[in-house]
Length: 348
Ligand code: AMP
Ligand code: MG
Image (cartoon, rainbow, N blue to C red):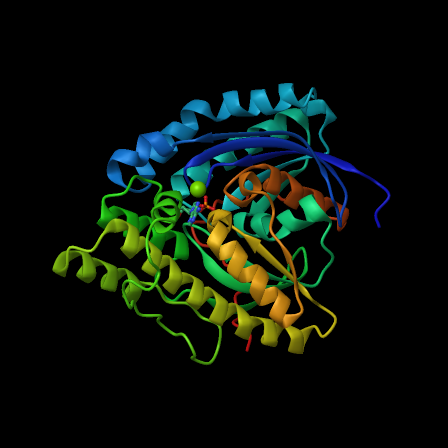
């Protein structure tokens, strides 16, 4: 265990949350969250049923300074107290990433602090160390509005991709289903709520890729089937939501079980499943994964919802991981990246 503790400011602007946070600690965690400010732009995007990049970057630009000030003052620290400034440098909506990265560069330069350019996905991946001090290696199921992947994690920069979506992300499937059903945005919580009052067996929806080799995901066929169903029949939103969610759970369970086997081959000593991303807030999915972990002899770790959805505490913590591993920070010339996969080479 590292004996030095680091205090970092984290900044996140890659999608529709403008966030800043101050976190203190050292790998492997757990760490201490001194402040965690998240300003969600949900209302600005709600009329469009999805995130509008132009609106997002403008909103980030307007409020990012205030959000950072709030994070510092709530943590009762100043920039001078920081060991570094961590910021999401991608992947994400490029305009938003640019706002956060440029702001962080200016602060790092002015305060003479190291800049740590963080991969947003790495932030999600490391959150269970911030909250639970989870040791490497672990299997990560990342399920969010923009991502759906199963990754073996054996270090802050050591990722093996077991499977990812070949079309839509799972959160996107929830959001599109909600839109088809006329439910409010963001769709995930609305579909989950409607599903509680419906029957999961009301409609027989497809489970793309289920039973196939490998651990990839596909959700677009499911979304199309939902659209067909709603167009052709007068199905209730409750029954469609419940049947849709049941299909998603079936897919996640099947794909995760296969990834567990791949992970066990690589890491016979590993037995932790970490779930991250906004969809991890779904209770029915959580229960199904807990059952799967029981069957496969894995321990399930799910960070609390406010740390599963986009936030800056995970970005600050990713910076703590980098400094704990001996990194001195990144060059100020670093560019924002719209695409930045965690692991480039699929692993089988
Ligand atoms: P993120 O991309 O991590 O910020 O998470 C946002 C995504 O999570 C959106 O696609 C939401 O619809 C989805 N989401 C949030 N809560 C739930 C839930 N209870 N069930 C399913 N999806 C959810
Ligand atoms: Mg988001």
